[in-house]
Amino acid sequence: MVEYKRDENLSRLLKAVSDTTRRSLLTQLCQQGVSRVTDLASDYDMSLNAISKHIKVLEKVGLVTRKTIGRSHWIEANLEQIKLAENWFKELKSIWELRLIKLDELMKNGDGSND
Amino acid sequence: MVEYKRDENLSRLLKAVSDTTRRSLLTQLCQQGVSRVTDLASDYDMSLNAISKHIKVLEKVGLVTRKTIGRSHWIEANLEQIKLAENWFKELKSIWELRLIKLDELMKNGDGSND
DNA sequence: TTGGTTGTCAACCAATGGGTTGAATATTAT
DNA sequence: ATAATATTCAACCCATTGGTTGACAACCAA
View 1 (cartoon, chains in turn cyan, green, yellow, blue):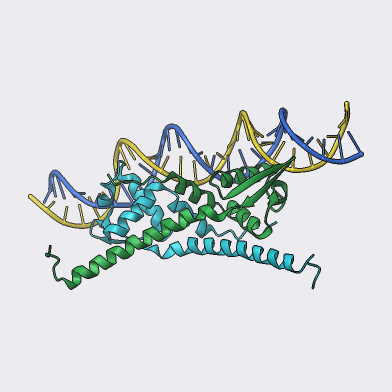
View 2 (cartoon, rainbow over the protein chains, first blue to last red):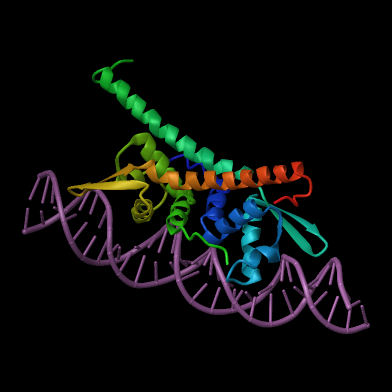
């Protein structure tokens, strides 16, 4: 069995941004800054409830934060967590590179029977 | 309605890597290079069929390629498509930065009633 | 030819996900 | 007090997903 680094956080983060509506919401929030749920929802052909749920998903993985003032919930983007994904990509690429380097050394040293 | 850049490709890519098993498979492929389906599957507590399906998902989004020789299907990682995701992250961050810059200019120019 | 390997296809199942509608809860305005 | 606003909660529906098992197909070896 492989070690299976079962990084559930990363899975949930990637799943969160794998939805077009949620990515669009994030973009909106980055463009317009802090926004209320209703304001965000008004741009979509979808019920307020649906948007509310999407926001909750984003909130759960930390991609947005919420500040409730009276009956208004102010939502703000927080791109910090995106690093989780970026780091995974980086790591994967370096694993890939590493293999190529080792392969290259093997070629140079002939049959690899050294050490 | 917001423009809704419905980048289905990006959605499918992100969804593909949002699964732990598939991320693990990709890691394995980067470490070990070209591998057969059975070899990959042998590391998991899961049926060969399940792994076969996972590989097909990765294949469909271009994260792996397949070369069939006889009855052996040789699978190889191809990290090219990851750029799709990386670019989206980059774009999002630059949108965020842009707003901060504009905000900053507004502060400097007083109440923003210019132009 | 007979039989083991390698892998997919098809059908199924339980769980999850994205959407809906209809309350319910707070808060603000009249 | 009453009504409108802002938002979530709960229940539901249907499509998708991650897994299973059982055939099947193609290939290689005896």
